[in-house]
Amino acid sequence: MITVENLTKTYRGFTAVNDVSFVAQPGRVTGFLGPNGAGKSTTLRIMVGLTDASAGSATILGRPFSSLPNPGREIGVLLDASAQHAGRTGREILTVAQRTMGLPSIRVDEMLNLVSLTERESSRRVKNYSLGMRQRLGIATALIGEPEVLILDEPANGLDPAGIRWMRDLLRDYANRGGTVLLSSHLLHEIEVIADDLVMIGNGRIVAGGTKAELLSGAGTVVRASASAALAQALRDAGIIVTSSTDGTLRTDAEASQVGEVALNARIALTELRSADNAGLEEMFLELTAQTQREGAAA
Image (cartoon, rainbow, N blue to C red):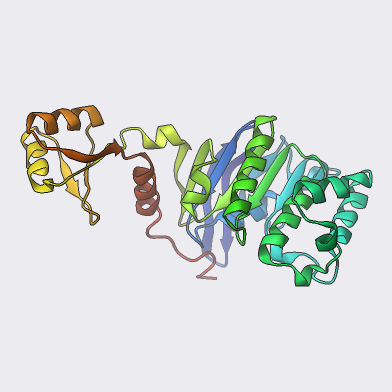
């Protein structure tokens, strides 16, 4: 479990993280969402002891990161895949982690197999790796100690669609086996398909949080018809508030069944009728974080 309570970080008068509180539960993937500069990276750096908090606390498995005797055995961390030693090979980087944590040497080969880095690739220097290969190596390093908690910042960067699917399956399986996953990204679509819980941050503050279902409760309905104007008028006549989108669809807070009934009574054929779930989540995310600043800009 990860517990963040009233976390604040100020740089020379600029507040990058402002009274942030949330919990990431075992057996669940928690998506930590916000635009670039919203405070995500600063929050994660405080969690893993790389930055001191000005106020508040962040504990992992009930303790601050700095108090863990062998952190890699309890917490797997990937904050920047490009920060790995460019002159070492992938195998050497994993071997250093294996020896530092006191793990059996077989863990190196197990991790290389897990992240699909071949023997030839693992023998190459990291400076010759693509970003996607560095991400795979970073995930392998985070998992090598069989930790209970994973903290990953933008792990999909550089991965192709097959790699993103692989990563999602890997993290889903990890959470299903009882692990705690905190997954940070500025891209909603990377997280919404895997996350059980969502925490949205903007301007250094938490602006929304909860399960996807909770955040989308009352998201409404998206509907499309060839007679769009007639449908909009029929919905308004029924007392339903309607807004038009640039793609030709209509949005309303009413249930899909009610919208369908109005269209039927008005004898208007529908070409699309669905819950506004994903569109509603994206709209909420953009609206709540629209006024964000670059992290540390005032510093």
